[in-house]
Image (cartoon, rainbow, N blue to C red; front, side, top):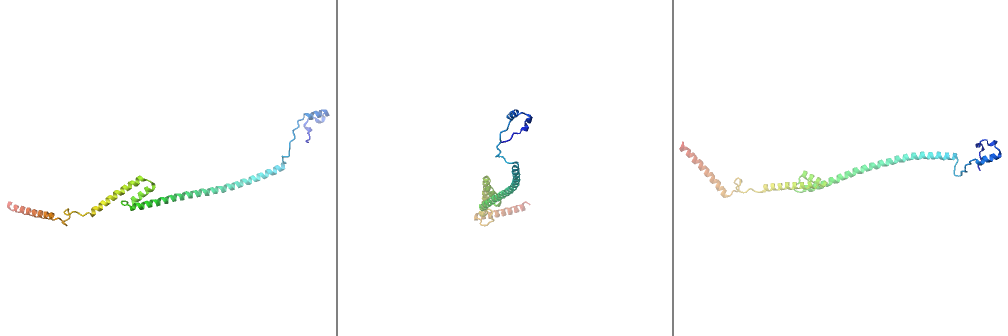
Length: 198
């Protein structure tokens, strides 16, 4: 049991025993505190310093962890960029391969020259069907012109149509000869008339 500190009572030594008892009864005594859950100041200070050291260590470790995490994130970002670049290259190669295949097919079709085939292949790969149909119409018209020009070259000229007398029919030859004779006779008659008139 805790002792009562009588020095807090003013003039306690000069009081009579009855007055001392009365003063002690009026004194507020704090309730007893259970100290079994408490540790000494030395122990608390020891644990406090250990906690501070551990906290400092943890902060250093967190910085290392954060640095490692930042490095991993940078590597991840770099890999993502490389992946995007590879995907873009892959898409470009696919598009070029598709365009080359379409171009080869268009070059095999009549009416398509190199430029028109390439333009149409790019439009086809891009899905621009209006351009594809317009170019096919143009190729058809060009091919039609080529066929007509070839037919004109191969078509023989009919006889008597400026063929230079080669393979002329007899009636055309006879008419030409008669026309020459008549012209000669007219010229001779004209000359004879001039002699009489002068």
